[in-house]
Structures are given as structure tokens and as C-alpha cells.
Image (tube, rainbow, N blue to C red):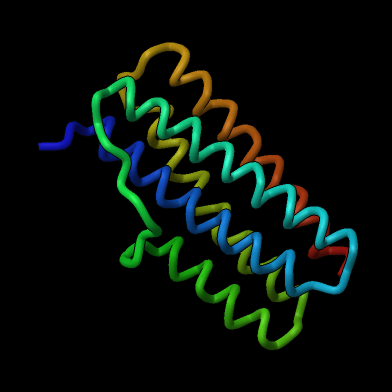
Length: 146
């Protein structure tokens, strides 16, 4: 049976898979160069976050769950981005990205505050969380400007 830390880390891994794909799609669809760069950077960052979490899972002798989370609320948010992209509405995409980031922030906050982890793992997750919060602030600023 999977322990609590491994289960939560796998959830974070799935969140990152979903966000990586969502941001990648947003980057490919927008015509705004500033948004394109922002979305691409976030996609790349989530890819790195995923690898960090895979290393943590390896330290716990747990195999990472592959693929994205079909049942998660965050996945539904990122699927909404796909639908919103079809409308060619950057502001709506930004709003959906904000929702996705809020789900990720909640999950990361729970992991950082509640899991018993190695100090370097907790520091890595705290750094991810800080970056997610910065991303959310940037999304909100971009939405206000659009």
C-alpha cells in the first residue's frame, strides 16, 4: 500500500503533468508574444517540477504514476483551457490558468505543511510552492492588462 507521502507526491506529479500540458497548449495557441513566452516558461517549469518529484519518489522507493489525472479537479481545469483556446480568448485562458494554479497551490501547501519529508524534499516543494504563487500573481497581472 502506498504511503501518505508517496500518494501526495504522486498527486503533485499529476498536477504538474496536467499543468505542463495545459501551458504548452496555451503557448501554442496564443498569438500574443508575451503570453506565449509566459506559458512556455510555465510549461518548462512544470516539467522540471515533475522531475524533482520523480526523484523524491525514487528516494521513497515508490514508482511514479504515469500520465495525467483524469479524475482530478485540476485536470478538468486544464481541459477547460483546451476548450477556451478554441474561443481564441487569451483573458479566458488566463482565468483558467489561475484556477489551475490555485488547485496546485492548495495541494502543495498541504504537502509542505502536513507531510513528513526529508529536509531537502520539503525545501524543494517549498520552492515549487513559492514559484506557483509567483506564477499566480503574474497571471492575475496579465489578466488585468488584457
